[in-house]
Amino acid sequence: MTRQNRVLAIHDISCFGKCSLTVALPIISATGAECAVIPTAVLSTHTGGFTGFTYRDLTEDITSIVDHWKTLDLGFDAIYTGFLGSFEQIDIISETFDRLEGLRIVDPVMADDGVLYPVFDSNFPKGMRKLCEKADIILPNITEACLMLEEEYVEGPYTPEYIEGLMERLSGIGAKKVVLTGVYFDENKLGAATYDAETGERSYYFSDRVPGYFHGTGDVFGSAFVGSYMNGCPLADSVRIAVDFTVGSIKRTYAAKTDVRYGVNFEQGLLQLIKDISEKNESISDSE
Image (cartoon, one colour):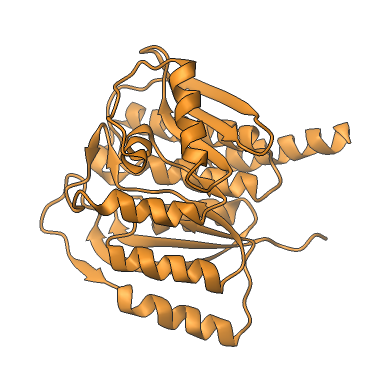
């Protein structure tokens, strides 16, 4: 039996409203990896659409957790970071990258729809860019990409030339593999693009657009991508699997008319996610 992969997820915990660690932990675990966690903060709910939420910052605990792990000689196959609430947390996670082995996957969560999240100031993208310099794979949306590149945000629909140029410039930051989300060439399809700077390979994958805005979908996508990629699926196939899983979660939520603040129904798609990863691995084995 093959050794179980171990993934470290570094995100906040929203106790209600599915996102961040309450998404990453079950999804990555369902794909067969051991998922360790470093919580960066604990909130009663996420901040999208809720008011009066509680917030406890755990910045001071992060280094102590890593210190303890170093005494145990723990190693990781991948380190997956998401929402980081401050420059101090970015600096600490950057140091953590140096102290712990593992593939570095960074989702630079900080903006969407051309706008930086209100909890961040205008200098925050520069800090996140520095973290992405140390990454092996980055998972920005188009807004985050433009902010890190200090380029003006462009509204879609996009052209392949624009998207491919954007990904090439992103790879110049440091990460050789880029997954760009929020890509669309018309109003009916939405998806993601990939670029591998080492091979020059590019790919696109789209699905039908579902009307509305659904909280936590970036974390659902990122976690499914990490789970797929760490199971040996190639970059493009990992994105395809993650897009299908995310869109399925959105469609179930949309059909049930669930309050979008509560997050999407990813739980009932976990079995299909596992099947998709298994089928891809079988096809890879058969072709070898």
